[in-house]
Length: 169
Image: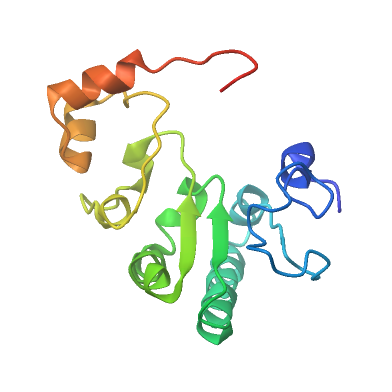
């Protein structure tokens, strides 16, 4: 692996890592290219915005080709860490892919620190198309957070009660 941030986290999913079976579904663990990595933050901060947009768009296109050409019984997952760096420039593509990928036994996981970073022009499509939302706490703009995710005060209270247990989760 080249040098990149969070390398130790990604290696947990490699063929020798503790989570090696998560994406394999019993398939050949020696299969090459099970995990591919691109530093989205670095790509999106390139000086030439047109080049940056083209690179990220081609990555999403490549993922879609893999979704469409894989055997139906195989699953495929594309994890976009630092998703806010590409959400606004690739919103139409991401909206389409979040809708269609699940139909093809695939997953597109968008990771963001705040929900509001996945809302573009007031459109919450990326949030509503998600099969699962994982929260570490509510956003600072509580009313917008509740509205975007269609949550009530009881849901907010439940999210606020979540805590970490060191060494467990």
